[in-house]
Length: 185
Image 1 (tube, helix red, strand yellow):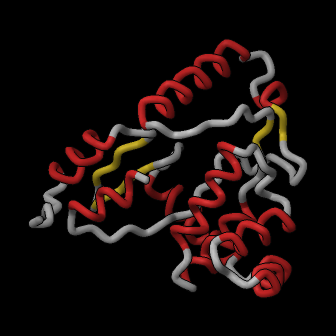
Image 2 (tube, one colour):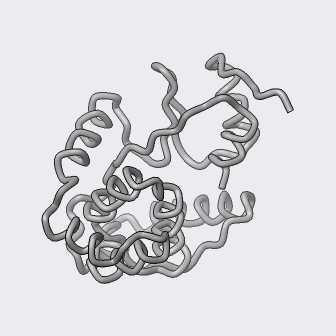
């Protein structure tokens, strides 16, 4: 993962912030045909660009047919972060969604992903059922709105922002332009 490389080479602390691209999607998801109704050329263009970037970065990519509401995944991620397993959980969710095309709004799927990240299943289910981290995700969404974020991933340092999947070199340049100190090897 690019963030791990950046942490290794730069003195940075990362903080995940929840951002939902398609809050209108139900638990069952929304097909791309529905999402891009009347805009199939735009969908094709976005898909080709996304695939190209994934290929350039050496990232596997499945052939998703739907997008899902990631609200509960964000809430469970907040719990995973508090328990020191945030990066593992985020990686598991990304793989499930982008590679294995799993429904990341499904509670059973999320509990399974939590378990794969070394978190207790029963606690994960309880966190989801009680919506313990709902307010934390609401606060993230509010912050994202205030910052004018409209896409993911977005990297923010101070008041500087870079949006979208970037090659490692571009992220490294972004950090340098923000005055971030490179670690001594």
